[in-house]
Length: 152
Image (cartoon, rainbow, N blue to C red; front, side, top):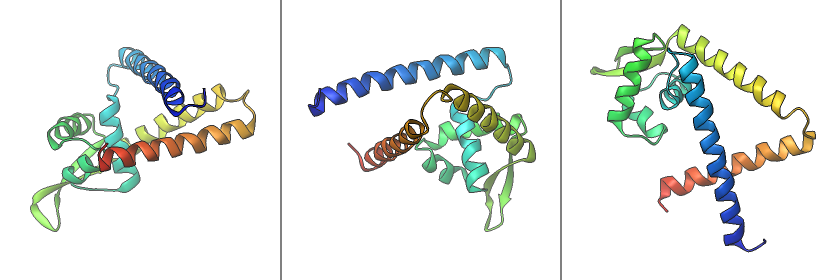
């Protein structure tokens, strides 16, 4: 099982299991919460809370998405009161997006619930295993992002 393609095949299978499970969890959450924000739109809110106000183009670049998709998702976030549009002080023709107080509250609440669920799920794991998982997931995600942005 040490051959690189064998390891890649097993890892690919596990990643697909994880993605499918995350999709099911998200679908269930959305079914139970009619005002829930779709995952892609929520990612925009995360970037606005963490990185501060920015133009839609910069936001689209940050999440590796196209501007038309980001525009649709921002519209949902504005409608829910999580994001505000204001004139760009540097160029009044452009718009700057920012998280509202309600958007920051929703972000913090979602993060708290996510962290509590993960902590509960991993509570039986050895601390070293939890740390290794976190370190390796970060490395894998960074490498995937780097490969994606440079092109395969």
